[in-house]
Structures are given as structure tokens and as C-alpha cells.
Image (spheres, rainbow, N blue to C red):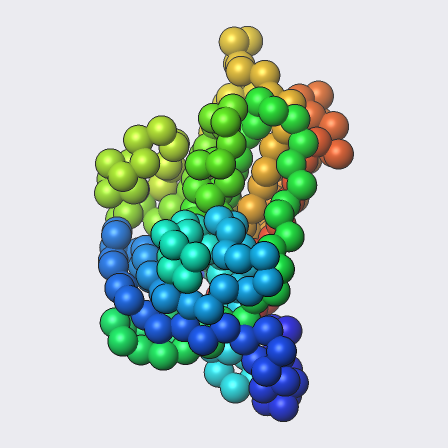
Length: 234
Ligand SMILES: Cc1cc2nc3c(=O)[nH]c(=O)nc-3n(C[C@H](O)[C@H](O)[C@H](O)COP(=O)(O)OP(=O)(O)OC[C@H]3O[C@@H](n4cnc5c(N)ncnc54)[C@H](O)[C@@H]3O)c2cc1C
């Protein structure tokens, strides 16, 4: 429901809306905001990776994912701050004590192929990738492209993940260069599954590179676009 009449948004809120209060906002890096909510749990309870939607305006919905579940009614999301779209403005308005509504149904986890996995994404996917990587006993390789000003702080916080700086106005270019270089190496690490999240056009290129290099079958690759050049609110 990226754009819907206010009445539809109100109806969705009635059926799947969870009352939420902001407990904490934390700028963990220049471009990243972590928000902790106390929020009524949906059926089945909150899960890491749970998809939530917010009514950023009465007619515009935006999606975010739960990164961590701290208690049955305490969750965090992690958002990359970019531009001044409705979602970005909704995030900037949050402050401790603020009341809001999170739209969420029962959690439907992403289906992942293989066990030796490669996770790739951009800043919009960091929270989701961390949720899935933290639950994955096989310790996947995680590569994330983020705004360059945030790279150092994110590396300190998540030393196990590889953070690469995004080029201004060319999303996905640094990851693509890393992927091409990695795929051409003799001693490359073999993987049998991949999760690609974030910028739609970049994901297409990454999947194509993995398949045409003979590394993975398309069915072993899970994709989920989170935003796209030329689009608002996927
Ligand atoms: C299932 C799902 C889960 C998601 N989970 C998260 C999450 O946990 N954390 C998170 O930060 N994001 C997440 N996103 C992405 C987020 O919903 C989008 O980035 C959304 O477009 C932001 O809304 P906005 O109103 O700020 O920008 P919009 O109004 O949608 O877009 C305004 C402009 O900004 C561009 N744009 C949109 N997103 C980005 C971006 N990330 N980087 C650079 N340019 C962008 C658009 O192409 C457009 O030109 C998720 C998306 C989906 C579909």
C-alpha cells in the first residue's frame, strides 16, 4: 500500500495496526537511525526480520523491518536516512514518548536457499540482513554498501560484516565492483545460497552476475527490492 486513499489506510490500521510508543532513538552513524518501540505484538509475536508498515502520511505507507526483538513487546528498527520523502520525514519526527501505529501481520520469513550463504544489500537492508545473519548458525558472508560517511562507525559496530562506501548517484556500483572482483578470483569462497536486498536495479545486476558466473542457480537466490531508482515507496 505505498499510496492508498486515507480511508483504506485507516481500515488497514484498524485490522493490523499495533499501538507503539517510541522508547529510544539513536543515531548510530551519520546516516542511520535506530528506533526502539514498545509495541503490541501481532499474532505469533514479533520476530527479527518482521515486516512493518507505517502510515507516513494519511495516504502514503512505507515499509521497514524489525532488526531485533528485545522483549515480547519491545522491538528495534534500523533505517538509513536519505532524502526527505514521507518515510524519511516520519522517521525524523520520532522522539522518545511519541505514539504511533505499526501495521504488522503474522511474520512470514524469507525462504533462503543453501547453507553457505552470501548476503548482499545496501543501507536500507542492513537491519534485515543483520536480523537474518544473527539467526543463521552458518555465519553467512555479509556485504553492505552504505553512504561513505557511515562506513567507519558501522565497521566498528559490526566487524564481521564487510561495509563498502556507496558512490554518490550510482547505487550498487561499489558492491558490483566487489562482486566482479570476487567472482574472478581463483580462490573465491564457494556459496550455495544468496540473499539480495535493497536497490531493485542493483539486485538484478547482482543476481545476473552470480548466475552467469555459474556460482548459483537462480532458485538459490532470494531477492527482495526495497527501493528503486525512479520510484517512491515500494
Ligand atoms: C519490505 C521492505 C522492508 C524495508 N525495510 C527497511 C528497513 O528496515 N530500513 C530502511 O532503511 N529501509 C527499509 N526499506 C526501504 C524503505 O521502505 C524505502 O527506502 C522507502 O522508499 C523510504 O521511503 P521515503 O518516503 O523516505 O522515500 P520515497 O518517497 O519512497 O523515495 C524518495 C526518493 O528516494 C529514493 N530512495 C528510496 N529509498 C532510498 C534509499 N534507501 N536510499 C537512497 N535513495 C532512496 C527513491 O528512489 C526516490 O527517488 C524497506 C522496504 C521494503 C519494501
